[in-house]
Image 1 (tube, helix red, strand yellow):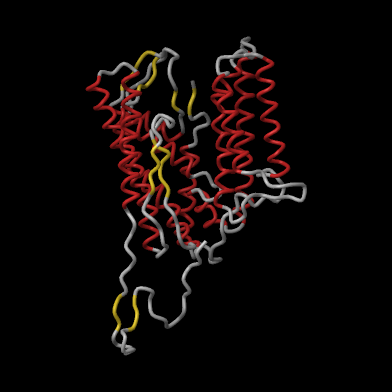
Image 2 (cartoon, helix red, strand yellow):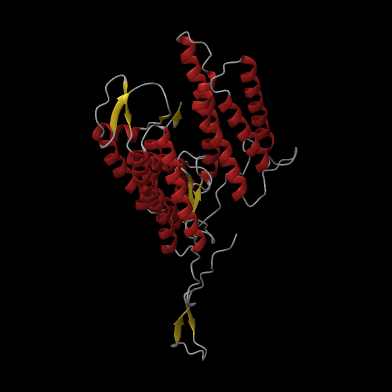
Length: 401
């Protein structure tokens, strides 16, 4: 990782240098290196096409005519990309203000494999963030800029949504405290036995709010991890470990609570596949964050005296296998099949305990150190408000089938 430039008192600013004759009065500006943009632009165009195609096909499969599907896909694409652009350029602008070397955003197209047609975007930081103040500004600018656009778009989209009979088909999108308030204020009334069918703009804003919720998790080098480290300093590393582990606990609590509700109602465990599917998001993200931690950590993997670290490939293949099998067993209630599935999950958890993220003293999700000077009162308030948005956006079950 490149080091930040030194700060020598009395030296020339990095953008200035003396002229060839050495005269102190003859100072000319150095040209900044050109900002690479061609790959970024290409990925953005590909993402626009990916998002449009994904929503167009989903709209067409739901029964919309071609013209309506094109119109809905255009609305969804425009709203979602506007939110993502606001988020990423919030980070980029704050980084430039603090003179942190940052790339333009790299958008990630993912047609059909993602329900949104994209995995969002990333910005590459090529220098160390020098102070906790800069870390807060860069970490908070993205989600706050995205929210400034996503919230009014959701309000407008909810007001233009309509109510449909509840038929138990399709995917039910997750709910949060903030979404409930917006629905109460802007959406039409939803009588019993009906559901709110979100307009394309509201659908895109929901996706933007969902992505913001994930980014605000106070773990590792997510936006929430940056903000929390700026606020708490090195104590955040201990907090991040507990937040990360709570995601695994939440998966089990969610499955057990759904199953217990069915058992008490006399349904038994025949819907166990559906309950696992509705809860597995948190298991997947528990492992995904461990993978991200391993990829961004200066050490190649967590290690212990008992053996090698748990590799990225092992985590990725194990998680993908569990996800695919759970999807295939969604409507199956076979005791043997689900016992085998939970047995495989137990093996993965044991591996995490011995060599991975659950190992005592693991540094997998530790945040890179930055300056020791704490935040001012004003910026500490900004940090608390930013992290509070995670609670307001938290969706216990983001997707339910």
